[in-house]
Length: 91
Image (cartoon, rainbow, N blue to C red; front, side):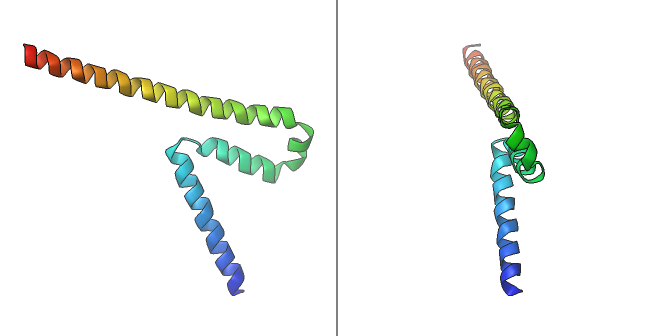
């Protein structure tokens, strides 16, 4: 019984750590999809492997797109701050 409790604790700790890291990189939804589809619908994954992988790849592509949008916004914000500071010094 003690080993089961330790195993359950370690499993929950691992899942918690995994989802914290995934949320930092915005990979929570693709991770949930990968876990739940493979656990709850193994027949679907086996029969429709191309569709299941396609959905996962689309989710990952959306994550990458969100990274690109965020990076572009940060770059634009930094440029605007530099222009504002240089305008304050010149004016």
